[in-house]
Image 1: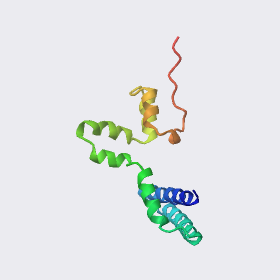
Image 2 (image 1 turned 90 degrees about the vertical axis):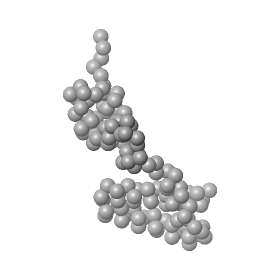
Image 3 (image 1 turned 180 degrees about the horizontal axis):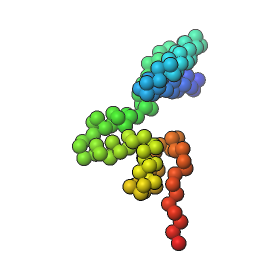
Image 4 (image 1 turned 120 degrees about the vertical axis):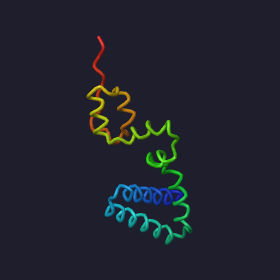
Length: 126
């Protein structure tokens, strides 16, 4: 539906704003905020009510708890695994190069969109 489209776009904007804010990119966060505010106002002009509320609910549903959040709530035995997932991609790459972890493991730890190097294929087995 048309309203659903607006809700999705505004929710997406809210998520982007939040991610930028959490990463400390305040200028970018402000830009995203301005964008979704404008969209919400436009939706209101067309006659859709409470777009903001609907979008906020949608955003909460879409933005799965971040790794940091999961880390905070994790029982001790899971913590180490999650902490390792938090390593920045370049450190993961280093570990893989030094053979501390397998390429498959490295692939699992680096989100697809951050993989600079299409990762370290294992050497072909003869």
